[in-house]
Length: 94
Image (cartoon, rainbow, N blue to C red):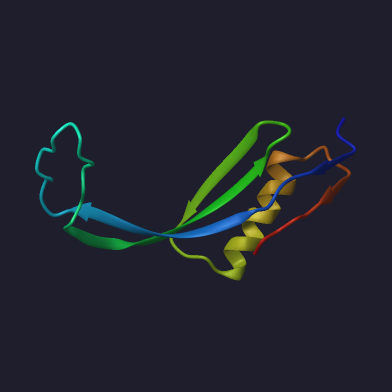
């Protein structure tokens, strides 16, 4: 039985979704492949939960980041991932 859990920051990352317009040209062995042209395909948000001492991480992708999305992530963390914990300590960068 887990009496308490402590986990590292729950972080949110807004991310741009892109697609290549055309394939890049082949590069020589001493060069780095570069992408100069892309098409924007929208945005999404990544919620990242992790606990380094346990070696655990969870990523949830949402279309946006609202207060409701954040609250749902916190509820899932407590109800789904740590249902047997009696207490929790939240360290959040958000």
